[in-house]
Image (cartoon, rainbow, N blue to C red; front, side, top):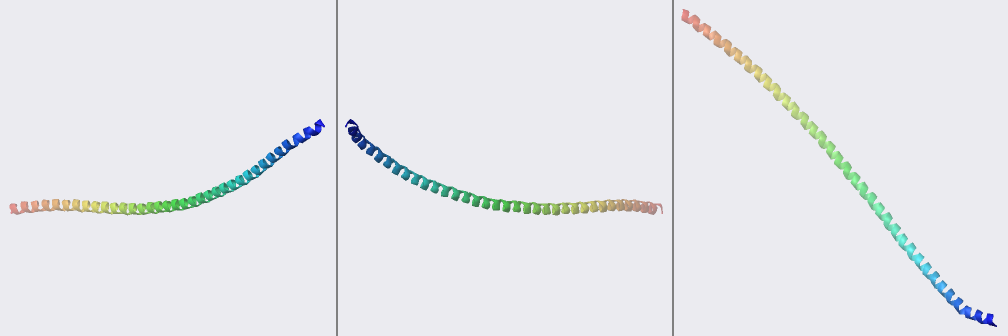
Length: 127
């Protein structure tokens, strides 16, 4: 009879434990659902950010290519202008050299004429 009384006493405790166990299981299921939902949301957000970064990387890559093309074009443009300037300088140097040569020739001719005039004057004064 003592065992029966103890069995009856345990039964309410057992039921309470089982109810608490069921309540904990429901909480666990609810927590797992919330966790899956949050992880799913985080996963979506992560993939969206990765896609956005890939898009930005593509845009920046395109912009970088454009800048490099402009620099290359500018470099060629500068190179062309530099070549034109060098050609112009060479032309001016050639003109200057030709002018100096003509000036020397003119000076020589003037000296010759001065010498000829002096010789003619000397001849005229002898006559």
